[in-house]
Amino acid sequence: MAKVKYYYDADTLSYRKITVVKSDYYRKIIVGFFGVAIIAIVGFIGLSQFIMSPTERAQKREIENLKFHYELLNKRLEESSSILNQLQERDNNIYRSYFEANPITLEQRKAGFGGVNRYKNLEGFDNSQLIKKITKEVDILSKQMVVQSKSLDEIVALAKEKEVMLASIPAIVPIKKDDYYVASGYKMRMHPILKINKFHKGMDFTAATGTPIYASGNGKVDRAERSTTFGKVVYIEHGYGYKTIYAHMSKIKVQKGDVVKRGDLIGFVGNTGLSVSPHLHYEVHKNGVALNPLNFYYGNLSLEEFAALQKASEESQSFD
Image 1 (cartoon, rainbow, N blue to C red):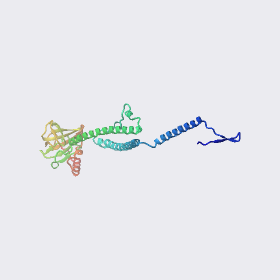
Image 2: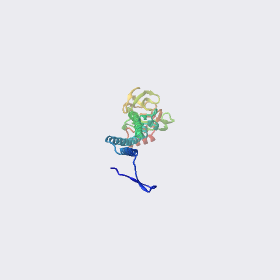
Image 3: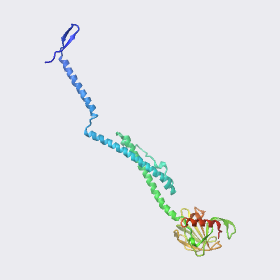
Image 4: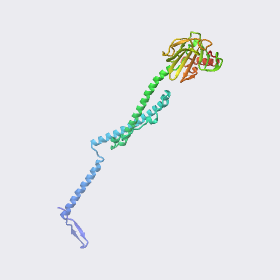
C-alpha cells in the first residue's frame, strides 16, 4: 500500500493530504525513462571513444605501424640523398675534372617535375602530407640517380678514351738511352750551317748512322718523305692534337698511312738534309705549336736520367 503524503497549509495552519493526479504520475515516469535513456546513450558514445572492438584496435595498430615505417623510410631517404650529394660533388670536382669534362649543373641535377599535380591521388588521407612528401622525395632521388648514372657512364667512356690518349701521347725518347747523347735542346741557338740565330724547336740526339729510331707514341704516319731541310723525315699524327717529327734519317722504314704503336721501329739515324753530323732531330707539336720534347719523357726515363738529359739540352749545341 502506497504511503500517504501530506503538506503543511500555511493559510489554514493545518496539514493536508497530497492528492496525486495519474497524468502527472505517468509524465514523471516517461520523463525519467527518457532521461535515463539519454544518459545511457551519451555514456555509450563517450565510452566508445575509449573502448574499441578488436578489429578497430588492430586497424589502429596497423595505421600506427605504417606511420612509423613511413617516418623510418623518410629518414633513410634523407641519408641516401646525403650520400648522393657527396657522390655528385666528387663527380663534378674530381671525376669530370680529371677527364676534362664539363661539370653537370645544379639545375640539371635537381630539375623538378613539370605539368599537373603528380600527387593529387594521394590527398584525402590521414597522413597525406607525409605520404606526399616521401613520394616526392623518392621521385626526386630516382631522377637524380638517373642523371648520376648517365654521368658515370660518360666517365667510363672517357676513361677508356683516356687510355687511348695516354698511349698516343709521345712519351718516350725515340732512341734507346745507351745509343745517344744530347746535342741540343729546345732553345735559341746559332744554326750550324745557316749561321743565323734561330729558335730550335726540338731536340737533337747525336748517334751513329744506322741507330734505330722508334715512334714515341701510338699514331698514324702522315708523311714519310725527303725534304731539303729535314732530309729523310717522318711525321706521325698521334691524335688529340699531337704530332711528332723525326728528321735527318738515313733510311725510313714506314710509309704514309701506316699505323704505328709506341716503340715501333720507323727508321734509322742519318745525316741527310741541313745537318752537320749524324743525329736525330725530334720535335713534338700540340695543336700546331712546337713544345719542348723534354716535358714528355716520362715513359722511359728515371728521375736521374731526366735531370741529366735536361742539363745536357741546356748546355749543348745543335747539329742542324
